[in-house]
Structure formats: structure tokens, C-alpha cells
Amino acid sequence: MADADPRIESAAAADPVAEQKPKRPLLRPILMFGVPLVVIAALALWWSLSGGTVSTDNAYVQQDKVSVASDVAGRIVEVAVKENQTVKAGDLLFRIDPEPYRIALAQADAAIANAQVQVTTMRASYAGTDADIQAARDRIAAAQEDYARQKALMDRGFTTRARYEQALHAVEQARAGLQSALAGADEARAKLSSGSAVPGVNPAIAAAQAQRAKALLDLERTARRAPVDGVISQADRLQVGQMMMSGLPAVTIVRSRDAWIEANFKETDLADMRVGQPAEVRFDAYPGLKLKGHVASIGSQTGSETSVLPAQNANGNWVKVTQRVPVRIAIDQQSPRQLIAGLSAEVTVDTRQ
Image (cartoon, rainbow, N blue to C red; front, side, top):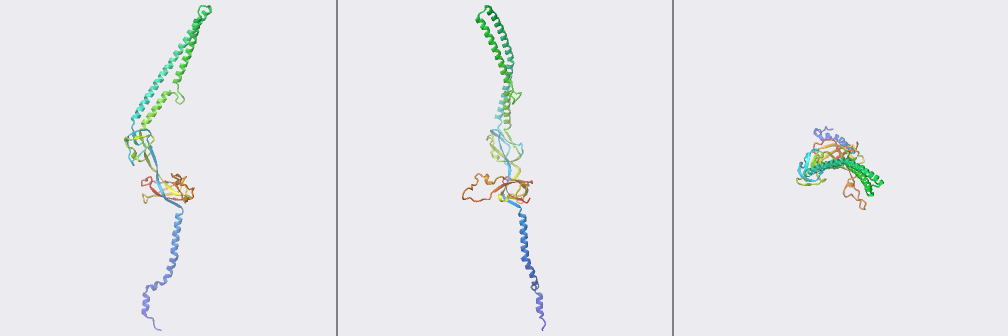
């Protein structure tokens, strides 16, 4: 048998494909079984991580708002704040014209002085009742002496019956005068007495003092000050010269430090949700900002119950709609960016804890 052609052997040795043919059986099993296993593992990991959380993007930043109204009516003479200005509790917001209330305070002072004069007069009148009582008693004694003389003369026939009856009538008048003097003393004493509500103070003086206290309070309230710390909102309603009515909202203070999230979760997300569970908040306005929080409370009614026109489902065209329940999310850390009331947010609650 002839020797092999050396050209054929060199060609076979130089063909790289011929050398790799034995490796193909190993690559096929890897592709057939390895890739599905990786996909299954990734799906299992995603399922384990996502199964214990619920999320919603129907969430908004909320802040306490204090509506400030004027306690007294009058014309605005000074405005000390402007829109979006930060104020502290006690800072002046605006001032009502104080002149009418200064006049009312002066009238109250005059009423106190008048009441004091009346009390002094009543005390003098009461002091004079002692003299009236003593004079009435003296008249009784004199009338009784005259009556005794006339009676003795009448018994001996030395006087007339008319004179006798006149003496008797004088005694009766004197006694009536004593009763009148005693009644006058009681009346004067009663006017000077004080009731149990204000012991030791005459009611007329107490009423005048209460009137003065109200006038002074109204005068102090002409300067309206901020009740809390916050940011001024809706300050355009404050204009110098504008008439302000008592109790009418004049300006709003937003308490920016007390921000929270109102997240409207589907009713199907509440099965495992509990108060105290941790939450993560993201904001549409600040991409990349994440704040930690927790579930502070779960609403007692759905949003449709508090709407102006609640849905009426008692008809033949009823369609079941998944309801939303407001959940309050408390923010546990200080935000590096300003949280503005009404900003959209996304909330994720970890229901595994």
C-alpha cells in the first residue's frame, strides 16, 4: 500500500476547524441548560425582593397650614410681610388702625371713674342713714311724750278729742318714718354690697373694669402677629387701606417643617400594611432624592367617601372600581431640598416587617 500523501497531512494539520470540531458537544449543553437556569435564578431573585413591598405614585407632599384672621375689624394701616417670606412666631404680620380702639379704651376708663363716683356717693348716702334713723327715733320719743300728755289731759277733760287724736297720729307717723329710714339704710347697704362672682368689688366698678379689659385686648389685637413659624402664603390679600372683617382669613402660614406624605394606596395593597412599617419616598421634582419614613396612620375611609359627589353604585350600570385609601407617611429624616406642599411623590412600603 502506497504511503500517504504528505500534502493531505499538512492540510489537515493546518485546518483549525478540524481541530475545534470535538469541542462542539460541550457548548450545546451549556447553551441549552445554563441560560434557562440563569433566567430562572434572576426571576426568583426578583420575586423574592419584590414580593414584600407595595408602591404607589399617587402620593403628594402635605404640610400644616394655619389660616390667620383678624380678631378685630378695621382698616389695614401697615403690612409687614410679603409672599413666601419666612416668619417666626410673634412676628408682626399686619396692623389694624388702632385709633378707634384707643378711644374705646378711654371711654372704658371714664366708665370706671363714673362707677367709682357712684360708689362714693352711695357710701355717703349710707353713712347718712344712721342720722336719719336716729332722727326718726327722736321724733317717735317726742310724739310719744306729747301723746302721753294729751292722754292725761283727755282723761281729766282738759283737752279736746281732736288734739288727742292728733297726738296719736303723730306717734304713728314717727314710727312710719323710722321704718322708712331703716329701709333706706338697707337699700344703701345692698347697693354697696358685692356678689359672689366678684367678692369685694362693687358690681358697677367690676362691669366697668371688664369693659376696659376688653377695650385693651381689642387694642392689642390690632397688631396681628404670627402664631407659628412658617412661610407666608396668599399675602396678596393684605393691602394697606383695605377694610378687614373680624374672623375673615387674611393670610396663610405654611408650616414647612412639619411635612408628611399622603399616599393613596389601592385597597388591595392594604392586606399586609401596618402602622410603623418602613417606607421609602422619592420625589418627581428631585430625581435621585430618597427619604426614609414610616407608616404613621392608615385612613379610616376611602377617597371617594370624602369627595363632593360620592359615587352612586346602586344602579344597573354599576362597575366595580378599585378604591384608594389615604395612608399618612411620616418622614424620618431631614430633607436636603425644600419640600413644597403638593409635590408629587412615589412611596414604597416594606410590608415584610
